[in-house]
Image (cartoon, rainbow over all chains, first blue to last red; front, side):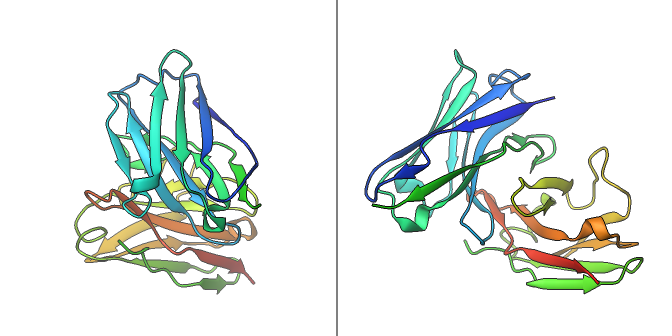
Length: 120
Length: 110
C-alpha cells in the first residue's frame, strides 16, 4: 500500500520561497505507473491542482502558478519536492502530495496534508 | 482554466438519492473521459470515489455511481446514508492544463 508523508515549514514569510517534501513508502518513485503530484486547499475552500512530475523528470504545472512553481524528484531518497516562490497570503493552504495513477487518470492516494501559513 | 462548476450544496433524507453535477467545457469534461470524484470529510484528505467517469475503485460502495453527458459529469449517491455527509469534488483532465477541480459540493443528510 503506497504511503505518503509531507514535510515542510508550517510558517513562511511573504515573498519567501516555501519548500515541501513528500516521502513515498512501499512504491519506488521511479515507477512508471504514477505522476507524483501536489494539490492544495486554502482554509475553507476547494482543491487546486498545483503540478506533477513523472519519474523521467517531465513536469506539468498549473498555468496560474507555473512561473513560481518547481517540482523535482529525488530517486535516491524516494522523495519528490515542491518549491513555491514569492509567496503571499493567498498561498496559505493545506498542501497534499498525491500521486496520479496513470491507468486511472485519478489521484487515488493522498498524504495527510501539511498546512503552510504565509504571514509576517 | 476556470474551476469546474458544482452546486454549493445538496441534501437528502436517508435512503434517498442525490445527484451532484459538475459542469465544464469541451476542453475538459466534454473532451475526455477522465473525470474523477473525491469525498472529503472535515480535516481529512480527499478519497477517490469514481474514476474515468463511472468506474469505482475497490472498496467504494456501489451506491456511488458516475456518468457524463456533454460537458457535464454527475455523481449519484443512491440509498443515502449518514456517513455520506461530506464534501465532494469532481476533477477532470484538461489536456495541457492538465487537471482542474470542481468548486466542491457539500452533501447534507437530513
